[in-house]
Amino acid sequence: MTDTPALIAEEYPLDDGLAQVQEQLQQDLAQVRERLRTLVAPPHHKIQDPIMYAVEHTGRLLRPSLVLLSSYLLEGETGAATHHRVIDAAAAVEILHIATLHHDDLIDDAQVRRGRSTTNAKYGDAIALLTGDYLLARCMQAAASLGASRMMSMAETLIDVCVGQMLESSQLFDPLRTEEDYLAAVSGKTARLMRTATTMGALQCNASTDVQDALESFGHNLGMAFQIWDDILDICSEETGKQVAKDLLNGVYTLPVIYAVEDFPDRLLPTLREQPLSADRCQEILSFMHESGAISRAAEVAQRHVTDALRAVESHPSFVHRAPVIGRYLRNLVDRLASQHPALRAQPGTARSGSVRPGSVRSGSEALPSYGTAKALIDDWLNGYIAQPNDRLGRGGAVCPFVAPSLRAGSLEIRVRAVGSAPVVGTVIDMVRHALDEFDLIEWEGSNPALRSLLVAMPDLAPTECHLLDEAHRAVKPAAVRRGMMIGQFHPLCEERAARNPGFPVNRSPVPLVAIRPMALHDILFLKDRKEWFEEYHRRFGSHYKPSRDAIEPLFVELFQRACTEHGVGA
Image (cartoon, rainbow, N blue to C red; front, side, top):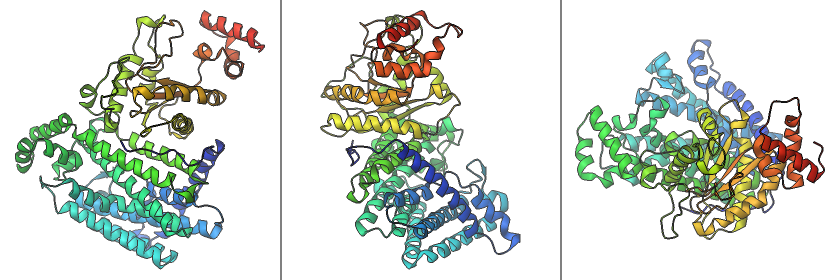
């Protein structure tokens, strides 16, 4: 896996920096939505409905967010006038995106998008086509108001998007489509618009050419990863309720299909040439993709693009002042995109092919888990070990009683990070600090905050390097406790022992990772020994030990009262 460098600054800004970015982004996106409605306002009331229908439900506004975040990286002497131009640039990018979706839906004869009827399904193909054309014209009008170079950028973007889509359409039902063919099409039809989004904000701030190049690299690589994720989801969409393998049935042979054909040409080429595909034939192709590891290979390509994208932002000297905060925010944004694709959490077939039993140790000569395999291993570990009873615990119940309900509530998030070759403890400490900040930024599923957990895996951390994770845990735990959080390290050689059975190394896992969750009542087991830790625990849970409250496990009461006496903290 490609190295992921640490952020530039050695010391991170105060935690409220991330909150300020979130608040500013939400305020600016509200302005973008208002400008969208203004910029596309139709000149006649009789055509208002389809046009406003197109812009009223804009989804997560990913591309405008990229415009804004790229401008935040360069904030310094920019004033209100520049900020207004950034808002208009973000709106123009979104108008172009919406216009291309109208044409995509017509090409695909799509009836539903984002859970509601497409414009062509609601108003007919002719109106949908004209609505898309109208939005393109409005986009160019908005870009022209920002200057000739901005309009040229939008025009070039539209050209590249069309070329990418034409390249894809020219190879429909072509089983000999290559990886190079696929990447060329994706670079145009998806990555080009994200590349434009990340540079438009910088252009409004008069960024230098090398800064623009860095942001172009970020946008391009993020766009490539985004499309590969989407293509994986198309193949593994049973969990989402969508039609499985719609691209395959429509003759769009994406990266997982291309990889599977490379591995099984004698079996798949004749099948793909038999059109139309029957349900049985389609299922046979899906099985080959799972068995060959083609889906995991595609996920690894996406992850390499993510690594390259983040490196472009985090390593550029022009971003040194804002990169620590914005870089962490971008990491969280990227992770949220990836986590929306269930196929990337646990791909069928990968868990068994590379599984390692909890507590077992991988030798230094064995290959480290891939991106996709790491997630599958963690999923097996959570369900087969952490959420299960274990006789060696010294108590009844699961190793962690919160994991099963957390999984059911959708409140357990998994991230995969690369520490890179020859990591040092500072690198791992940085990653754990990042994870603490990410926890606060995640848009959590479920209504119970107590069930929220974030797991950050580091699959390229070799067994001989796992002591770095232990050192990072010791270094970061005090800051976590002050924030009301608990962190735990898990890896194949971890020597952390069960609270009720010191002979049981309970924190063994097949993949090195750190787990983060809110402090809980039972954490008296882990916070009783240091005064500053116990004070934080007492402040949050001391009232639970009052006689009037419900009964608490006697061991907890004993430890709590002993800690009160030892540390001079009021019971």
